[in-house]
Structure formats: structure tokens, C-alpha cells
Image (cartoon, rainbow, N blue to C red):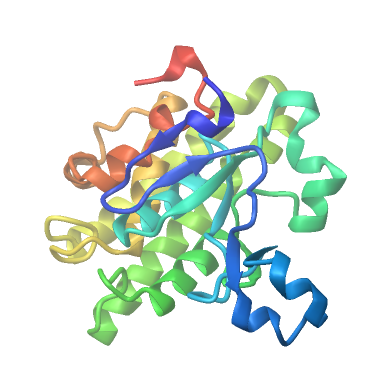
Length: 271
């Protein structure tokens, strides 16, 4: 499959897989060019193509730098799918060549040398929750943060519980330092966090983490459960987490953004 051929469809919009995004082109009419070009050029020019500018928006299509198995990248892919935002996807392999995130090119894009990174509206954002919050403010429908201030605080609490209190303790950089004990370390970190999360969700959950609407908390939950399964954590003690995760995985946005269905997913791990 050529890079330009791999396309997947979220709830609405498209995801286009390519190594590096190309800017959009626009044809400018002759009347506009009369202000720019010498008069002797007019008989020979009907339009001029200029790259990297689109008069209908001030930026090209968003570009997501992602790794198929990155739980932080998955959160953002879910948000983009739910909100129907089309984007270009540039894979960054965290394993190959010692980690492509450590290249000079990617460091210039994101000095933290982590995924995800999102180019959007003329800026580059890193950190998944910051990206999701920006998408929420610029594309408010469907909502990922409830209007009710108490529920909104609960969503942020659960999202931070996972994104700050569990996932960083078992991410790739930490596990590299743990050597042969990395499996035990990851299991202990996840189980400790899930014990607290299960207790919290018993007070906040409806069908999903907070009530019956999908929220930013759910975008964090599903990738973390996938991590737990990958590290062979027994999910028996966490029935609320398990129930919510199962319900979320039935939604199309969670299916299309799943690590097993990404352009850079290895053949042996594809759904």
C-alpha cells in the first residue's frame, strides 16, 4: 500500500495517511494578478497557483503526529473522530531507529519528543488534554465537557487521574528504566490507579464515566484499559471500569481510532 492510499473514515470527515503533509493550492484569477504582475504578462496568464494558502480558512487541514499504540495519541484520535474533523496523519514510530520521536526534525516540532502533536490553525500543540481542550473550544459540538460545572469538574478530575496519575508511570520511557521488572511495575501502577478510579466511577458514572454522555474522561479511560489488557492486568476487581469500557468500544469513533485500525498498525496486530 502506498502512503497516499491509506485512508480511514471516522464518524464524519476523513483521515489521510502520508509521510509529510503537502500544503493546499489555490488558483488566483487574472483580475487579482493585475495588481501583482507587469502588464505584458496579461495575455499569457489566466491563473497562478500559489501554495500553502486557502482563502476559505487560515490554515491547511490539521496534521496529527501519532503512533498507533500510543494511548495519548488515541485520546486525540477519538476526539477528532467524535467531532468529525478531517486530518492528515503522520506516523512517528516510537520503537524503530531508536525512536523516531528523538529525531532532530521531530524535536523541532515538539521539544518534549513525545506524541501526539497536532498542527492546527497555524499553531502546533502537544499534550493530549491540551489538544482536546482546544478542539472542545474551537469545535464545541458534540460536547466533551459538560455544561454543568460539577460534572465538568468530575470529567476533568477523572481525565487527570488517568493522564497524570496512571499512564505516565507505565509509559515507554519509564518501562525502559525498569528492565526485567517492567511488567510487574506496569501492573502495579495500573492496579493502584484503577482501585481508586473504580471507587470514583461508582459515584459519577451513568452509561459512561460521568453520566450518560461521552466526555473527555471516556477518551482517557478506553486507551488506559487497553494498556491494562496489554500488561495482563486482571480486570475482575474493576466491574465499573469494564462495563463503561465495553459500552464505549461499541461507538464508531472509538472503533475507527483503535490502535488495531491505524495506517501504521503492523500487519500482525491489525483487526
